[in-house]
Image 1 (cartoon, rainbow, N blue to C red):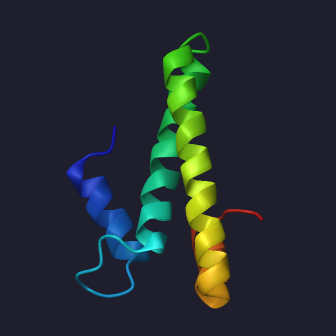
Image 2: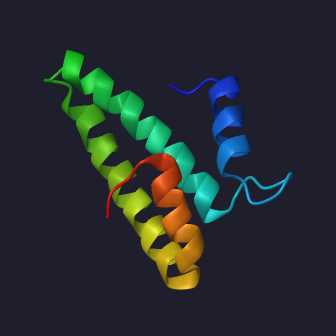
Image 3: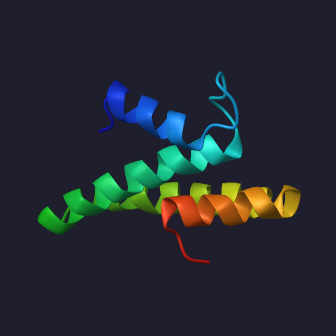
Length: 88
């Protein structure tokens, strides 16, 4: 679970401008953070199928946001992949 401080840090790192909270970059950043934390949880609890299903939904949602961003702004897409250390 992400704390307010973690969310604020992710928003600050990926935002386009000072009041940005809903751009694709921010949404992908938050989903990536949630995915990483849930992946750690699933390593400790391999039989937790409910969390696994939620993880797969988050991965699909992140992929959708990334496809949108790639279509709309290739530079922002490339910068975000590099910033979040994601591979295409």
